[in-house]
Amino acid sequence: MTVNRKSDGKFARGGAGYWLGKKLSNETKTKLSKSHTGVNTNESHPTWKGDKASYATKHQWVARKLGKPRLCSHCGTLDAKRYEWANISKEYKRNLDDYIRLCKSCHMKYDNVASRAWETKRLAI
Image 1 (tube, rainbow, N blue to C red):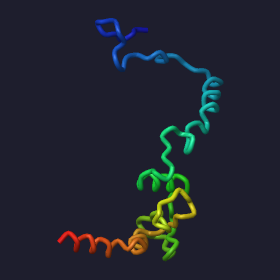
Image 2 (image 1 turned 30 degrees about the vertical axis):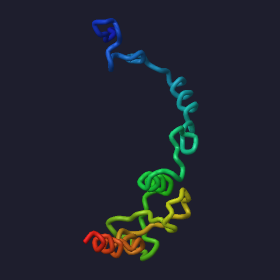
Image 3 (image 1 turned 120 degrees about the vertical axis):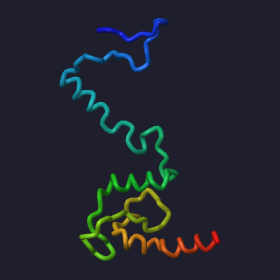
Image 4 (image 1 turned 90 degrees about the vertical axis):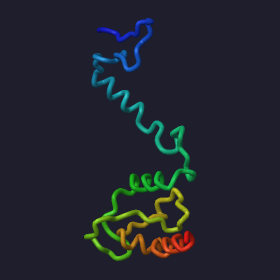
């Protein structure tokens, strides 16, 4: 095996690593997999922010936990092009009971997007 070195004798960045070309047994792979199960997930992860996480991160968390919505809880439609998880309390807590599934149309009405956009536009003038 050749080792990628610079002219000064140090390893070149991105060079051949120690495990390159070596094989792990299935038993070793199984042990490694079991030892890493549940490690650094959710609250045990070092960069976990809890309720201080961003808006997008909380929505990704909800989608991961509750899955992809396929029915609108408000109008009951099954044939909308897009469904979304909407926050009920508008506080964006990490509580799965605080989210409902809505189609895009009902979500816009629920969040009152049109009037808020008009207010923002009016204030800018």
